Amino acid sequence: MKKFDKDRVLVAVAGPVIALVSAILLTSIVLVASGRNPIEPYRLMLEQIGYSDVQVLIINQASLYYIAALAVALGFRMNLFNIGVDGQYRLGALMTALVGAHVALPAALQVPLLLIVGALTGAMWAGIAGVLKVTRGVSEVVATIMLNSIATALIGYLTLTENFGVLVGDNNTTGIMKESGWVPGIDLGPDVGEIYGLVFLAVLLGVAYWIVLNRTRFGFDLRATGASETAAAASGVNAKRMTLTAMLISGAVAGLSGLPLLLGDAHTYGLTFPAGVGFNAIAIALLGRNNPGGIALAALLWAFLDKASPALDYAVPTAYEKEIATIMQGVIVFTVVISYEAVRQWGLRRQQKRVGAELAAQAAHNTKEVAA
Image (cartoon, rainbow, N blue to C red; front, side, top):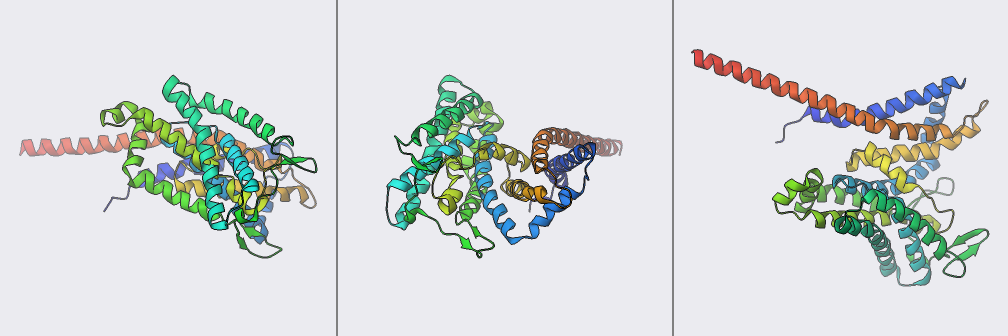
């Protein structure tokens, strides 16, 4: 049985806790400086958890964040910074919506087809950055940032009415998808809402992520290459192939991240489709320490801040700006890296002291044996 390592648990938990506490404290300082109650906004947001409709909104939003954050985490495990998840997510949703609007198959074939389209689109878009990195040494950060901008322009072009766009009011859309591609969810009533059916896809992807990384040779090779390409190459791993493979898988997962909303509610892609999910996913993956369980908690926290913050606008007698939640998210992003590095240094010093104490005890024991 594997020995419980309390130091490792402390290091894993301390970083997110410090980041969250720091965010609350710094946001409270901003509220005090502006002459506002530093406690009331948190109470108002926490009250929202008790409402069933808000719970549904949080779960649905968290499913998008979770899948996108898994895509980011896959890159991080390979020491790759896939900052293009947002472009891959939006382009994957667009192409899925286009195929769903123009292809009509039985539901048993239509839904898998749409999932494959989303995954392949995301993989193709991320693969461009992967190919540039392994063949020309182009940084994936630079490449994916540029690809995000290109994706935005491409989406705008494809949704023009003279191409594939359908004008609905002032919104250029891809048109309504065929009903065979709609994924039913869990309907909790007219006053509560419906949990997306593809929330379960997020759960399956989380389980698959853990199994692949921790229980397969491929996962070991991926983590080893991320830790040291030289060491991985010495053990027979093709670092360039692993880099390209990691980018393709990361992009495929990113391409799926918008489908819970697309197939479960929106049924079309337009200007109102959420943007920025991929950028939020970077912070969520960092906060969750690239662990599927930690990412799930971070995704729920991010979704809670998104969906509970509107209540601040309607507080009585004094309304609060809902941007307080945005400030908290921003501070979390700022503090998470600092806190993780501080905790890592603390853990390293603690480990060095423990090893030093063990060596000293062993030396003392050897000295006694020699003397005897």
